[in-house]
Image 1: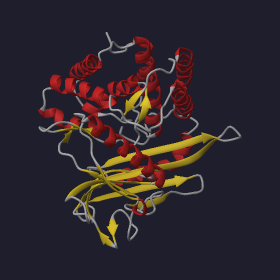
Image 2 (image 1 turned 180 degrees about the vertical axis):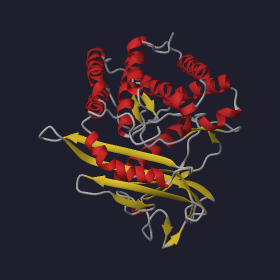
Image 3 (image 1 turned 90 degrees about the vertical axis):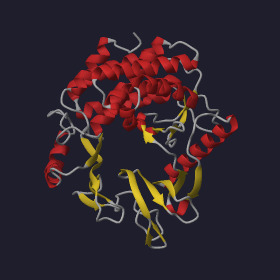
Length: 396
């Protein structure tokens, strides 16, 4: 996250007054943890009211850090406010504004009141918690647990079951975690823990070219899984997301809103017809790929669906500079090697027009999401739009 509190928001932005109300408490929180190794998750959701003004939907700022004194070895302080509250609330993990059952006596972190032995892997306030569980009753010594609200838990369960069945039917070389158990009352989904280190971390010890070739081939193999029973996302879905992105950019960065409206008009005019869809993991990023001598594995199928396969390839391509942390020259080599391996493994050339459409669409929607989360640095929005105006698409 860039230094400071939503540093890229225009002074004349509609959300600026809201942020100024929140700023003193958040800056005090930043000062509280100054010099501490922390991770921060933030988000501001706002909408236009009926009178044209801006109304707060919800805001949170969550500071997370290792804490040996905590039963979970992890602590988080989350500042939270929504449209019903006049002031910020403070939630100390495992208290959460939406996941109110996290610390129930028979919730996911306790069993009949006894605190479970866990390692917290990822906590997104209001949405989900992922952790490693040690010595759970009737389970292997170490498993991965996802906990989220009922709707999200049910969708994740359906997706993992469908992927497990597809991998077994095809005797595929793609290795995915097996679903071990579902406990709806505890909001817990138990998954096999697979060996390896996430690609974005393992890359330091790997040959870059060979790793990117393997990643491109693996991605196509995942998309070729004959998964059944999941929803499809056509062009209409992505245009709707793009329209929402334009509205959000205008709330945070009105100085570039005109350019994003032009982009949306171009996306609408040039939208590809719905064609062949393939299975998409939903969040195919380097951190979702485990590297191990025995083989590579793919994790996290919670948001899997069917879509144009290039939609997910474009998302990976755009995320690489941020995810891999490589020097610019190595990043471009990694991207190109991944694309070439994916295309070769698919056995068909890239459709240049479709590829450029997906790049523009994802750049626009990701810019909006990053603005909402306070992750955009000053000048970044302009740089993203300048790059799109340049027509650079990575295909050469």
